[in-house]
Length: 255
Image (cartoon, rainbow, N blue to C red):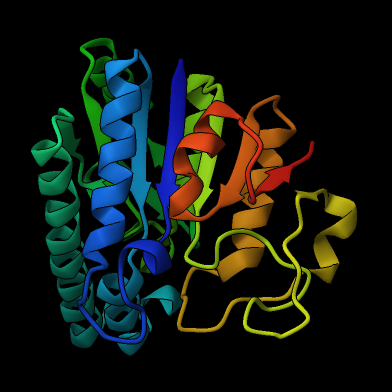
């Protein structure tokens, strides 16, 4: 059974404090993955940039493209910080017995005008066949039109799940799921199910996010659900329940 899990940047980093991890959440996710891996599950993990990738990419406006000297530096700096975060995530997974292997997203994928144009799914498939756990991440990648652009972890997660025929796709968010209004609103309520019909009523989360935030995540989630993949969105505390499909406070994405 294959589960594709996207650990959102807001769940594993403190978006209000640059280059700061939420250690307790990474540990919690690692323990859950370790338990289910030992029970026979296969995993592909993808994590967001949070306070490591987004501030640097936004500073240099990488999503706009360009090959000016400051763009080259911005691309290199963003890649550096994403590598730092990825190393921390992989190291924690290893501590808890998960054979996690880092895959540099920008080495296996590129964009064309801001959209994924190529991704090497076969390297992921080969790793899974050896019971390894690939760990990718949203990244600054080469772009055949713009020079550079951002490839969102949300996109990677959805496309990998669809291409490899995953049983479940889980998006872990710091807010704990999809709400009727921005989560910080006093009258916000958790949506237990969401479909395209209810899409336009959903509020955006706050903070810097150069990948389009909740709207893009839901578009990718709907795309996977429409291919027959079970898709759940929620908080780190209910990661196991979301993977197993057990009832808990999270959001189910309907096809």
